[in-house]
Amino acid sequence: MMKKYLNEITWVLLVSLIFVSYTLTDINNESTRWVLPLILVLSMMKFIGVSFVFMEIKNANIAWKIILSVFITAFVSIIAFI
Image (cartoon, rainbow, N blue to C red; front, side, top):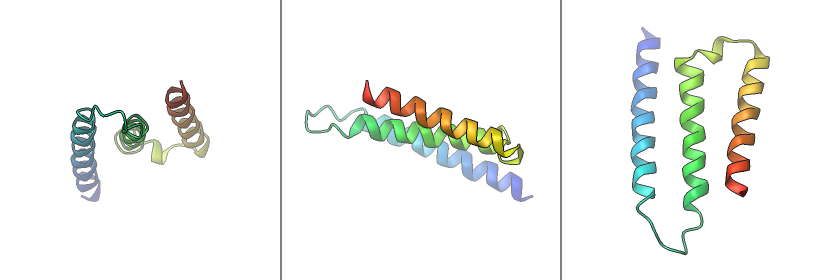
């Protein structure tokens, strides 16, 4: 029963993060250098939400959790600094 609510809450959060990312892309001001890193952090949160809740990584071995977290952090960091 709790898993159903967790899935629904995660889904609502994912949709709201997509909406926030979409609205942030409309900001085209040169003083908004923070928009790209913020969108990348929101994307990282969406990736972690999908992988831990819907792919059930939270029940996997700790090594998979660490590998996944290091991968997404490195990926977002590389894109942010290019």
